[in-house]
Image (cartoon, rainbow, N blue to C red; front, side):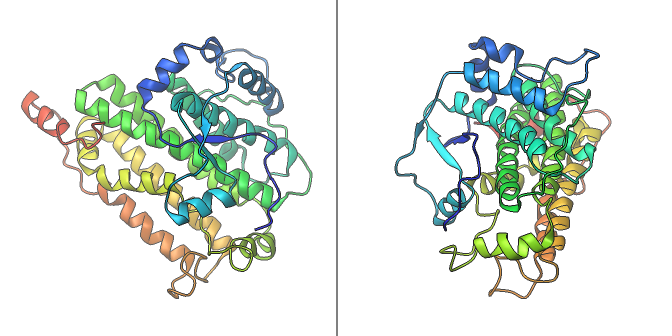
Length: 357
């Protein structure tokens, strides 16, 4: 494809996503993870994105190297083409260490990119992305989500945005958040099955934060002029520059997340009965993610088919995403609620949770 290396920051993802318990055990064994950059709130001093980036770099330098690059990665051709285009490297072994490194590095990419490239999205959208990473790290350390903002002084660059750099970096940030959601939803399922109310609330709140950050990440990824998508991005993802027509949907992480969304109806029924307000907030956050995707697609593609469906349908890219949105929200429809469950009813509902790994 002839793409130049966009990331000066080394980012790798685990080949298999570990459980929240394995990640927590690993973090407890490393002193630098006890302070974990960006989680020290409560002081009056303003924190800039550049200062937090420096702290993240320091923490990453003190973490041991982990993982072994997959020399002959196996996977569907679409997955491999997606990873190659977006410069995703996957490693095996030491999955908890690789996962934590990936989260920290994706957050570092966000903070540094904001200081290097022009940003026009709102401060709230930027904060939602950074907060999602901080909340993920906090919950994996045994804590909870924190409503306090972390970066209190966003220092924005006025440099002309580099469309390809933002496109690739934004997809990497979104992929890291997606992996976090996979961990969070699994943990939520375990908590529902165990009947642990505090854990249900903790992982529900994290899932909401990660979904909100994902919605912001979509807008961040598309934060460059539409003509740059037309003249630079789209040609790079289609023949002859690419062997096949590429799409951000060609991702193993996205496919795994979609499978979880399809299988989670029983778990969401349990959640609706126990925590109806959190159930509805998760549904609203899922809807917001798809609305953000639709917004970017309308801005770049308009009434045309997406790259993924060009030549196969005349349906526009935005209408196709709207269809995906409807499917993903199906498990949230018509929840069976009750003010109070008997012990037997509660156990029966919890026993249906599909996340039992």
